[in-house]
Image (cartoon, rainbow, N blue to C red; front, side, top):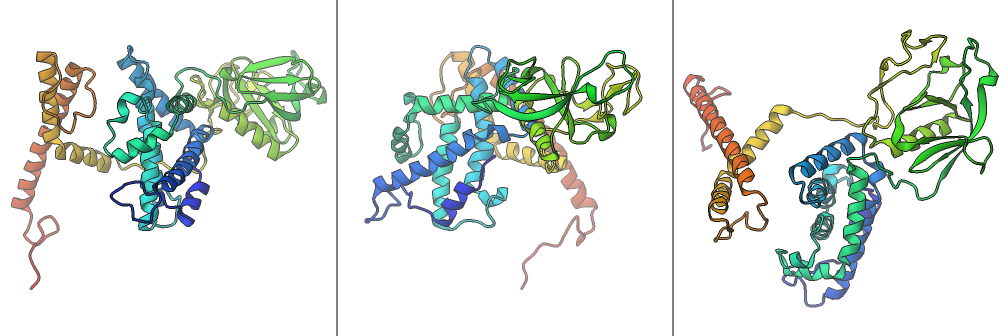
Length: 431
């Protein structure tokens, strides 16, 4: 989603962007540095918020679920559903990709020190701009660095908040929405549309009619003539899948099908390029529909059965998994054991902080007031002290149980493994 062009410009021809007074040199012009940093931030931010159409379908589903759960857990705070998604996307993806582009294969190698510092400042700004509601005046004073607080006074907070909200709506809407993929209708040129002929067993040229198609973010329409009133409309929210159609179905090439709540629409494009473009455009505008199909029929239902699986029921579920809309090169390789161990390690290291937070929650619940002594957790508000206390209690209990099992395993290994083996290696200094 994050294009490499702006990162290439920053890494290849970096402008001075240091605004920390402690790191500035005597000859540095801090105002010029601020303008340079503002320019880079705007460029990166603009690229990010315009990339919603490139968000993979799987990611949209994850963000949609996250937003829905946040809204259910905090029904009285409409901002939480946005902050949950923005924190996840901007903090875990965009901000990290900016500060370490080489780890995301956006750059071939680690940037030099000066460029790395510039990317760090941009990353901080993007993270803050992406945090829903983080630019309110009451929170400007909570920035760790005073110079960053001064820098953010250059931004029009309401404008950026609305832009971020629009972006989050596009990638995580919990309803069948009208994604702002295109501001103007897109005429998909002339194509052949299959017209169903009731009672006929033979399929001929008369079953295919030339039609003009028009796609907007709301609907797909087709017309007898260009710029004429549509003769049929398919709302985007009703599109269940868009897939290629087997050539053997009608002995025609470059065909695809739009599966919606009524009969599938079979279309023949003028060529394979147009067919791919139609499928891509239709998949993009419908990728967040909640009732999307996971399986489909790659052929047509003719003469009383599906030509692909020979099933005689027209309403039977598909026989092939849907493919359109999912990037072909997406690779998800997750080592469950390794990731679980990493989560456990993070909790184990942070046990003192978790215990202090638990004590703070208990204090708030009993005395109905905030904790008196500031700590690492004091820079955010505990919305529900009782629920937070219970969650922390469960986490601490599970980590303690895991610690017991780890200790037992280490004792068993040290007592049973042969000294000098891989399980119990010889550790010492080399003289």
